[in-house]
Length: 105
Image (cartoon, rainbow, N blue to C red; front, top):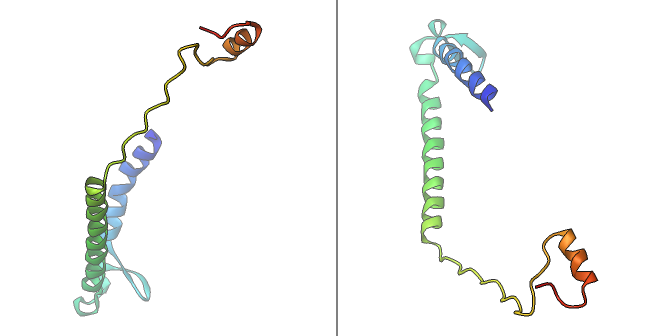
């Protein structure tokens, strides 16, 4: 887990620099300085990112509201154990119970 965090911390600045210096176009990756401002597709890409972010936020808010507003299920209480004895919980107790004539108690 620590290795993943270290890779993310080291990779984030590299990804940030590459995203700042280059732009992804239909023709491939180009330097940002080689693209004319009217040919840039950053506005379209930005709108797509905003749309996805809004959709994820609405989904998260809906799931959060569902979790808060759904009816709570009442827990079913465990059946009462007979007063004559208890249930054996380990293999040793099970063997001891089998050897005894009366129930474990």
